[in-house]
Length: 143
Image 1 (cartoon, rainbow, N blue to C red):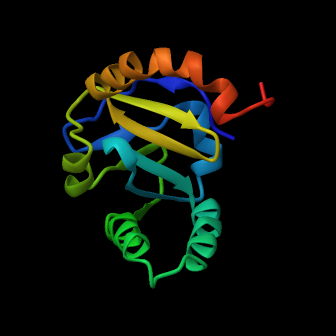
Image 2 (image 1 turned 90 degrees about the horizontal axis):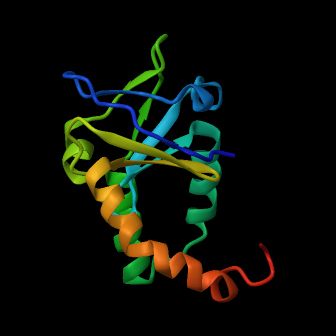
């Protein structure tokens, strides 16, 4: 399970240093792809394989499903962190998420999300009030 907010920076080679608390779970490799809301999703390899199994059951006769799967898989890349816990974010994914130097890495339960820091801050401002109001609708009785 991943949680927390971290603010690493991309280096000049497009490498991101993973937060120390996430490195063990990602040490054997990870899969990075386009996420929703213009962020990147990062999964441990084993979790990505399980996600792929579940997505394989999706009805490809539905155009929306096909479109989602195309975007999701076309941007996917597998990486292995180096000894310093760095992974290279390919140029196409950096462009998709508008990543430049300042990044925000958040834990999102079974995955990590990588955001441009300014985009993350805008998202949080826009969602803060909705977060306060949606608990009973979105996750009734859980918290």
